[in-house]
Length: 405
Image (cartoon, rainbow, N blue to C red; front, side):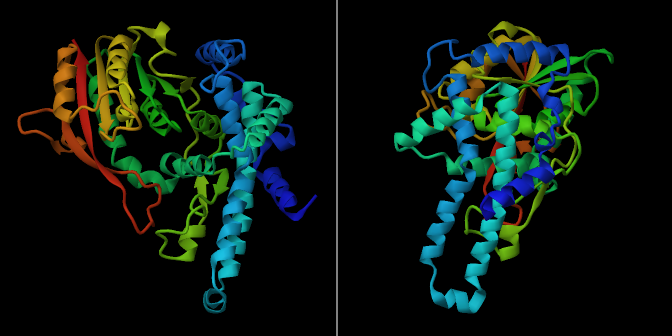
């Protein structure tokens, strides 16, 4: 066993319950809802379910597992590139080589968590090691490389969703959404349980905060990205706060005031995940086809602008909501790659009203009115993951509450 492998094995033995023979609670469906969805998920994961293409759920899962498995190799390659570029002056003045050696050590720490995530996912989804090895071998023979950027982004999303340092960014959106949910809940009898859906839920923290409002909300998450789903299910298996320690900012040298800022550790989750939250994996517009008219509230948080077909998102929201149900939106209008249509906010309002939604008042905690006399509000929301970075990425998020008439 070489030094790097030994370091990873040592880190895993400390943080990984699988190495000690324990069965994470997330592998055992907790409720009838969870058991039902797990059965449907495994059917969708079967190679014989639909055509075997790059969009097949199992193929996308294997791609994501490959990316996490190769975290160490991909980041070490980038580190080696950094080592070839610096000048001897830097070594004499600031000990640059020592800094790179520290980064190498922390890459191994992160790699241990990524391997833990892979092992957890393989047990959850029933993936054998040979199947993953064969997939990786074929991909690498074809000259493809595992996605280094995406795995680093998962660790940064852990900060935004599940660490104390992410509180500032969460507080720019969550209080508005949570107070709006409580306002809607107050319109129902006290013992009513409202079903809430969060499409594009990412690593899921908002859904868990909604569940923590009390027994009046039954929360369902939905996410397409397998990288996010693997990351979410791993975090959801952590039953004790701050059991994981990682270093999410070592993948890039830019925007750091100090070396310690770049190398600093982050702990997560800062709260234990709520056991009743359910994740449904897959395409929002199709995977919930059997849930027509079943949700009281749909919350879209940094989501609607991810659509290639925005109208398909709107139609799905309308179809899944009960009559009189509510849609809460919080997010920007940063349209992604190849969208079919790109609507302005003014156009969105007109389309949504034409579909039979009525805009309702929001509290001032959701920001200032975007249009005088209107009901949509604007609130600045950062999306940068790193509170100590020497840069800021922020949107003027658009917030609305509408009721399906």
